[in-house]
Length: 155
Image 1 (cartoon, rainbow, N blue to C red):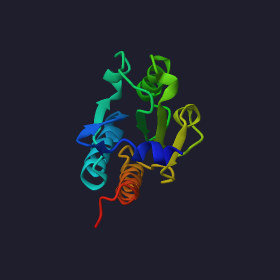
Image 2 (image 1 turned 90 degrees about the horizontal axis):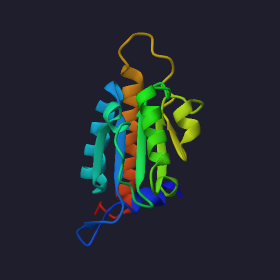
Image 3 (image 1 turned 180 degrees about the vertical axis):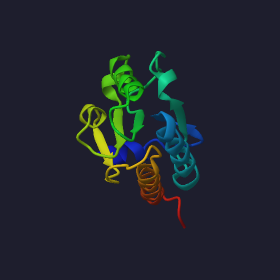
C-alpha cells in the first residue's frame, strides 16, 4: 500500500533505503517545508524538499520505491504538474510512488498521481491560501504521526 511504501523510507541501520522528495511552489512549498520537519522529527524519515519551478528542469535521480509528494493547492499549478511528469518520464519513474497533496482530488495532479491526500478545505476567498495551507500541514502532521507509530518511534 502507499502507506507501507512511505513507512519503508525510514532509516535502516543508519542508512536510507528509499527516499522521499516533496515538491511544491509558493504556499505549497512552505507547507512542504513543514511536512519535511514533521516527517523527520516525528516519524524519523529523511525528506528532501524541492521548488517545483526548478525541479521540472532537472533530470531527477530516483530509485525504485522512492516516493515523490507533489503539493499544490489547486492541483493545477503548471510547475508542479510538469515536475510530476518529469518524474514519471525519467529512468525508474514508473517504479516510484507519487502522492498528491491537493485541495480537491479531481485535478490534474490528483489524476496523474498514484495516491491522493485531499485537504478538502473548500474554496479560498482571498489571494492568501490560509485554509488549504492549514489543512495540508494538518494532513502532513497526521501522516507523520501514523508513520511514526507504524515505525515504532513512540515509546
